Amino acid sequence: MGIIGGSIAYNFLRRISADGETGYCDGSAYEGLSKIETLLGQRIWGDTKDKVVIDFGCGDGEDAVEVAARGAKKAIGIDIREHALANARNTAAARGVGERCIFTTATDEKADVILSIDAFEHFDDPGKILRIMRRLLKDDGCVVAAFGPTWYHPLGGHLLRCFPGRT
Image (cartoon, rainbow, N blue to C red; front, top):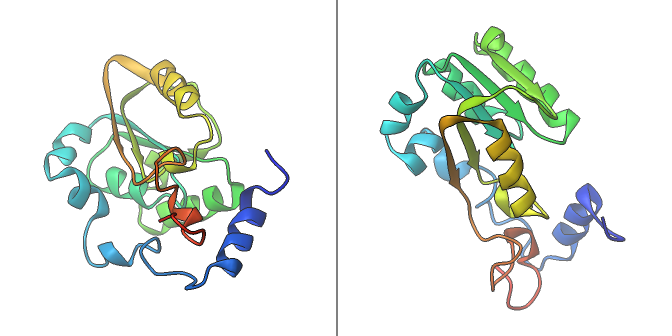
């Protein structure tokens, strides 16, 4: 990590941004909709039903909870932020799927499906993350990833939009 990283960097960038939060990263675009289904289509529910699913970069666990609620045998949410994992556990319990959801910083359990939605732009070493995913994936499994501009995108990641030429 450099001199500024993590929540310090995020808060710094928010404060110096000329227009502050625009709302496009707050989830409001999916209000009343399933984010997973909107991005991946209805087929995803058949692809995850009765399967072990890892949500890599799960954040507050909304996607893992939805996958479990829609029939996954087990949903494992992985994130590096303990406060996000605690929120995810509470959400899973409140929605009645706590017994089929695990939220952790790491796992050795193999998955049938690995989902990673809006997380790759936060990984400083995407190649390393892909190698970890491969290790966690069953031989006949699949990785489904959807993400916006990454750190290496010519216009920059979405957290750098406050700098000229950045989105």
